[in-house]
Image 1 (cartoon, protein in one colour):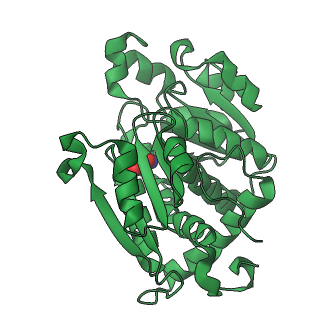
Image 2 (cartoon, helix red, strand yellow):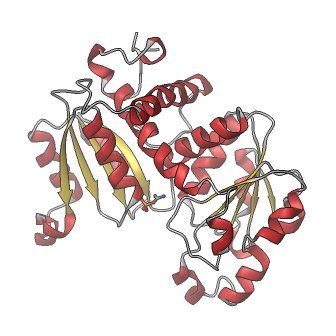
Length: 317
Ligand code: CP
């Protein structure tokens, strides 16, 4: 498949075949991760800038690793030490990087739409590493990859996503991707954190986690942004945890073997019990490993792979 998108801003404009091509390419990339060569010459001569205006552990470091493994040149743009603090705008900063012949920009920003804004103005490709409450496409892709590996595919599987849906770019991107792949997605949260319009994504919604769990193949707990409590969106952490916290006892309501996911970072004892996060059914560390493979796949496809064949499946046409 020849990759036709300059940017990856969200998953709404990707076809099922394109999402599946990313997942299939990620499978080959995971083989590379498991049997590492020093570096692949795949993207030699290509240059990637990481522009993270918001904190990140997983996304930033996995993009960095993914780019390095593929042989690309990485520029780690540090907002704290940059001219952003002298008032330089997002666009001028990005254009400065582009003038250094950057091929691809990965951006994380607290404003929804920041990635799209850059994509409109730059010749370089743009990957959205999380923008405000809007989208986090590579997180959803790595979640789909992890579920596909563990469940043998997503079609017909019941996936429950629980927590602060309202503010979650992860929930929104996952709802888009998982429904495209044929999963039954149920979004669960308190009424103040679960907008009814999410139903338009083709998902079910409920305020009652216990009633959503029977038959679930996987449950994804979302990080509760603790500052939300101050805005009065739920009465107390204790109350939230009692109703929406994932525990071993609660997970038993699925009545089957069920995997647990979490995009991180975790609030242990709030949205997920610590022992459950560390249990055999938890895929949290696997998500992180798979994140590198998926980001390698995305970078590889977007930058054309320089004609370097990993195997038949991921050779660009
Ligand atoms: N899941 C996720 O986006 O984690 P980071 O904020 O650490 O990148």
